[in-house]
Length: 309
Image (cartoon, rainbow, N blue to C red; front, top):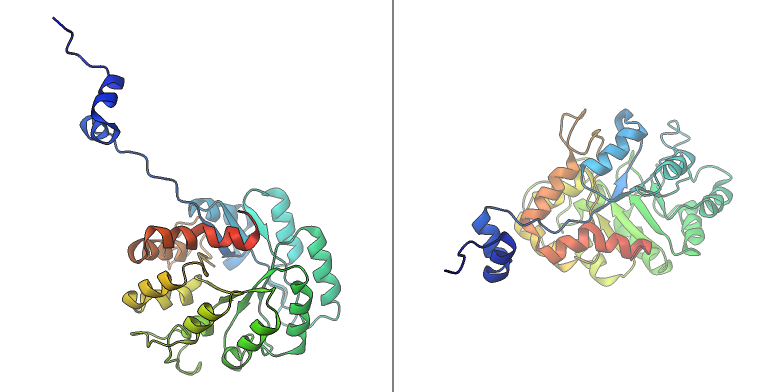
C-alpha cells in the first residue's frame, strides 16, 4: 500500500502556500513596512541621543531626518554640530539637516560649511521673523544652489514663526523652484481648510474641513512643495475630518511625508504623558489611507526627495 503520510514540504507543494499555512496554523509574515521619519529632534523635552535613536527604532523607522534648531534670542536649543555628531555615531539611522539662526551675521558662511560637512537639507527654519524677511530670501538663494529640501515651521501671530503664509509662500515657491519646501506646524495645517480661524482664536482648529483650502491648491499646483504630517498639528489636520483626510491623502500621495516631531523616549510613548504622536499618526494612516498611498507617505516620497531611491 502507498504511504499516505505526507511530509510538510510535500503538503505545501500539493495544497499551495496560503492554504498550507492555514492548515498548520501558521500566519504568513507580512511585508516589512519601510518608514523614514522626516521630522525629529535630539534634546526634545530633554531626550538624549541614545533615546532619540531608540525612538527611531521603536517607531519602526529605518532612518530619521534630525533637524537642528538654533535660536540665539532664546538660547541655542540644538546645534547642527550636534546633529552631525549624531550622524557620525549612527550613520545608518540619521539623515543630518542643518539650521543656522538667520539673525547671525555669519549665517551664509556657516550654511556652506555644513553643506561640505555632509548635511542633506535645511531646517527646521524657525525664528520670529516674517516669511518675506530678506534673510529668509538669502537663505533660500543659497540652498537653491544645492537643490535642498527646507522644512519651515509656519505659525502666524505676533509670537509666531515665518509669519505670512497666505501672502508670502506662493511667491517664494515661484522664485525658488529648485528648493523643496516642506510645510509644517500650526498655520500650515490650519490651511487644509478654506475656513481658517485667526491665530489668536485657534492654531488647532477642530470640526469639518471646508473644501478649497490653500494646501490643496499649493500641493496640486507646485512641484516643489511638500507637507510634513508631524506633531499635534499634522495629526489634528487629518483626525478632525477623516473622510476629507482620506481624499486629501489620495490626491497628494506623492507630496506628503510621514514625520513624528515626537518627544517621547522610545517611539512607544515612554516619558511623555500624551503618548507617541508618531504611533497615533501611523495608526490613523493605516485606517484611512490605501496601501499605495501609505507606501508613498511612509517611505517613497522622502527617499525620492533625498535621492535615496
